[in-house]
Structures are given as structure tokens and as C-alpha cells.
Image (cartoon, rainbow, N blue to C red; front, side, top):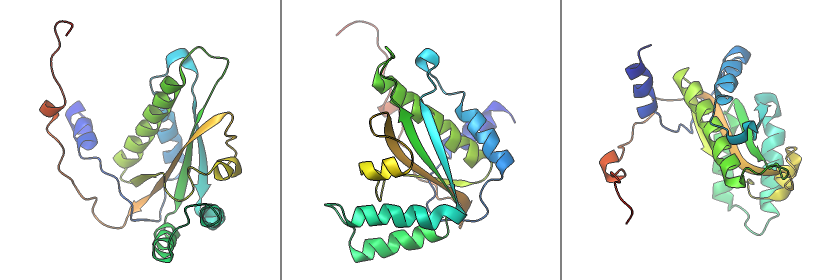
Length: 192
């Protein structure tokens, strides 16, 4: 693949929420996680942590998240709850994302979170280059500490960053208009 082809795939990347089986194979997941390991990482801390939730465990995962959310101070309305269940029903794979907070390190927490974001983006791009759809969600119960704990990410040691829904797109991945980069980039030459 020429570099322009690879860049074109990144330019055309888009989130895809409507997913179905099949999910990536173990071999494809291995390749995508290997790509995640090449993220920029100050201090070589490798702060990213991923948990794979396969379709046979999805119901338990979803029931746990929804139960916590419904008993929180921000329960989902019935209509939203039904939509969430319907969406998740067909998703064949979830990947939970967390950033390990190493309190013994001099590397600032924000750099570890950024590194985890970069690793996750490498994972997303790799999966989408393989033809899979990916949707990064922070919905349902992401910000409920008990949910994070239930996934094995102790809030004292990790920042839970949501999860990826991964599978085969149910339809063509929609393309959205991208902003003109000229509006976000400027040259700098001297202090203001």
C-alpha cells in the first residue's frame, strides 16, 4: 500500500455505530493491538489497558452497565434504554479502555491519558483499515466508578475512558464533511 492510500483511509475514517457479526478474528485483533503498542509514550510507561468483551459476554456486560445506570442519579429514560439495548444486541465485540495512573512516575497524568488516546486511535485505525466498523462510546455507565471497578479497573489506579464497539458495518460507513485544516493551523514565528 502506498502512503497516500493509507492516509486516504485515515482521512475517510468515520465512526460506525450500527454493527453486526462477524467481529475481527483473533489474528486481526492481535495485529490491531500490536499497532496500538506503537503509540507515542513518554517514559515508556505503556499506560493503556484494554479488556476484550466478546459477544457471549455482552449480555452480562450490558445488564451490569444498565443496572448501575438505572440506579444512579441519571437513569436512562425508557425510550433511550430500549434504543441502547437494541443497538448493543448485534455488536459482536467490545473493547474497554483505561489509562493506568502510575503514581510513582514523574510523567504527568495528562501525558499518560494522551498516550492511551493515541494507542486507542491506532487500534481504531487498524480495525477500520481491515474493513471493520468502530464506535468509541462513553455512554451508559462509563462515569460510574462501580462500573469501572466491575471491569477490573480500580478507580484509584485507572482512568476509565469508555469502550469501543467493533464489528462489521450494517451499511456503508457514512462520510461526513471534514473541516478545512487551514482554519485550525497557523504559522508561528515570534512570541506574541
